[in-house]
Amino acid sequence: MQTNSLTKPLTKNMGPENVATSLDSYRANGGYRGLRKALRMAPADIVTTVKDGGLRGRGGAGFNTGLKWSFVPAGDDAPPVKYLVCNADEMEPGTFKDRLLMERDPHLLIEGMIIAAYAIGAHTAYIFIRGEYHLATARLENAIAEARQQKLLGSNIDGSDFSLEIHLHRSSGNYICGEETALLNALEGKRALPRAKPPFPQVSGLWGKPTVVNNVETLCNIPHLVDLGIDWYKNLGRGEDAGSKIFGVSGRVRNPGAWELPMGTPIRQIIEHHAGGLCDGLKLKGFLPGGGSTDFLGPQHLDLPMDYDTIGKAGSRMGTGTIIVVDDRTCPVGLVLNLSRFFARESCGWCTPCRDGLPWVVQILQRIERGHGLPEDLELLREQAQRMGPGNTFCALAPGAAAPILSGLDLFEQDFIDHIARGCCPYVVEPEVLEAV
Amino acid sequence: MNSFSETEVLSEIKAVEVMEQSNTPPGNTDTELSEEEKREIDSEFSRYEDRASVGLEALRIVQKHRGWVSDESLQAVSDYLEIPPAQLESVATYFQLIFRQPVGREVMLLCKSASCWIMGCSRLQVHIRNRLQIAPGQTSEDGIFTLLETPCLGDCDKAPVMLVGEQVHHNITEKSIDKWIEQKIIQHKTTDADQLPD
Image (tube, rainbow over all chains, first blue to last red; front, side, top):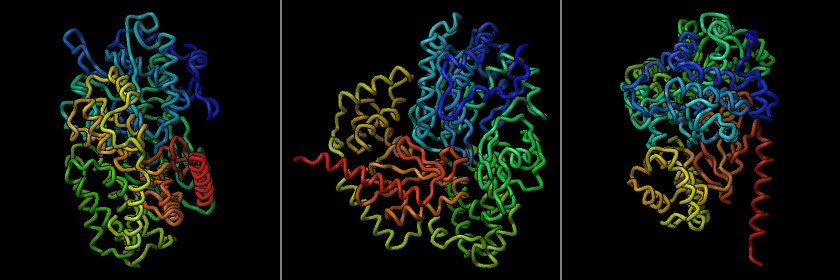
């Protein structure tokens, strides 16, 4: 194998920030080689490769991608029409990895989508992209046109008998569209409420047809996994999980940003080495490992590797792998309030624990943050958040909203108690700002 | 949400009145789609399985031409797609980027998600409120600026951020917001003056 020393398959083509790779330069760097190889394989073998390669969904849930594909009916009895949908509705607070991939190397996503569609037998695919991502939309539009012109999309792709069209669907806001069944309703031109599962989209999805919904970063992993093989892919990871991942850090650090690193990279290395550590005079109080709907972890967790299962065992989720750092001058109560307000606003209103529970949570948190909290509020808050836990709602929004509340109450307990005991927010916040939030 | 002071409520009423008076673009009471609007909607049909699925796309197209989606515009789209207006309305009211009220010429999406909050976006919202007298959901008296809330804008390493039109403003400060507001006021006043009849 020629390039099995490749360690950064997701970002290797990325040049300066203001340019995207063209089809020519993408090809010159080995692009669409994975597709050529894939088109000579049986679709079922691609599914097996992706499954055995251990690629796990990069949208946050971490489900084995090949396994997800394997639930799509295949063979002669299978429904003739199937769909592939790329979830590019990146809105998780603190997450900025898919935008990077789409803006800087759009052909990687397109190649991944063609291979995925071939593997599951879909001839129509959609990229469901949020309406606010103007630059990514423009660059994808351009890349799709380039690919069509060079017969990488359309009929008889690259001389094979496989055909595929990719459509770009621009959405118009709303966090819940990132939930795959809500996304499918939105694509069908309906109000984006999540659907009951089962049936799962792989059996009955878009317009009732078998559908696979994959995240942008997940699909970007496919071309190299198929091209360079399972062993190479597994060796990319440092720990239990295979492949590389785009990790990011935001908050008060010296060098906020995103970097492609091996799965299993220790959190400390990401925050201290890549993000340059906290800004002068600040100390780490805690962090959200993978976006706003993950549980807070503390300084004692810094040496954990960023692996799905390791972070899970520590009581959180790796989520999107983009870390939000909480420094010791940021009020944790205010941050939990900020997150809860976000989830309350973005709730679709379908399930009672979410629709009614979140505004209650916001009111309690607001009361504590403004210094009017009562000692019994902490238990009340915990109870309310527990009611939003898994199993009580159609989708994962409410459990996701409960995660930072419950973990915040544990990790920052003293801060909550201080707010109530002192009758004010002990952090330096101007009263006017406090009222406006 | 429910703790607005009296002055805030009054300024909100005033802002809404101003929007209603000055901001209705001509043509928005049309219950017919223009030929151009129809052409653009038609070109979407081949990409979806049925007409109803084009709903959101059609609303986006109409909003692009008319600035916002009035009741009449909604009815026109509903007639054209042959779907009940209530069904289309349930979509129109769901998505934050579909405007069912007139908006200003500069729609400011100020990101207030966790990373931007840590980096001080609340102070910036207070600054915008003091400067333009608008809270989220409101339009300034001159009809130029509308402030809206948004899910995370996905530029967290450059927080705080604000999206206006297609332009993302990174690492914004009170100073950079002021500078941008000044520029926009001059730009729109100049354009308006140019359009006055001799």
